[in-house]
Image (cartoon, rainbow, N blue to C red; front, side, top):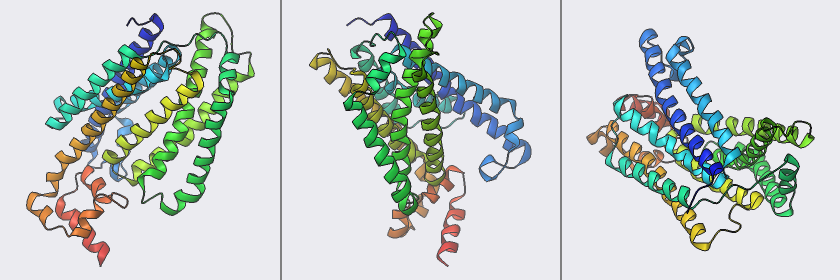
Length: 350
């Protein structure tokens, strides 16, 4: 099926965003390595010399450009098309890390990359057309329809319960708490970003939308949701291993965002059953590829615990590798020697 010019612009911007964001991780990591080599103090243990490293700032600028491109992409294409394409940034990062940082990409990781690309192609080919919107007030009418208001209220109640009841009790032992808050708020932030982006696009086209209070309301929602989202995402990353947080967050965030977009913008309205089924299948393939790529990183890291050393781990200690606050995984990420990891555990048990 053909693709509209609006969808094509959204796809190009989403692909550019993935490229810039994926590359930014590698550039920043190179900057962090340079800073650590120059001072002997890594950022992970409190070093801030990287703030004086031009390469790190280049990575930050690259990431900002990618985020801006992603923001604009939502103004041209539906969220069910733009959001899943974000997985391609993981592929860009993995491939560049393989060639530039010499972080070997496991065959399972290669399979995950292929699955992400294949799923993305299916989504692009069967994605719905972008809904024609002429004013921010039209978006407001969509945002205040009963079905979406039920979704917003449900999200608000769930976030309230997670923040005030579950987070203090088990937020540091269950990865789903912090990532759940991030994902729920993220789905609302994307809807607001799309509304704000569409308003700005119409304004640049000569139809001023800044005179309407709805535009500024969506901007306020964006700021509130993004701040909350980043706060709890940082808590999740600080508490648990990245290889655990990334796939769980991506799966939850993407699923909830697509659900919110389908409810609010009725993205699949008028789509054939075959196209909807193809979109869902492509989305599942992308999710599976993303998880496989992340799992392969864990698989590749496991020998760092030292072949025979891993056999010395007691069943209870082995279980702690996949539960609790993920401290051992984080130490492995920090390149702490296996003997140091074991000694830390012994000290804790004494």
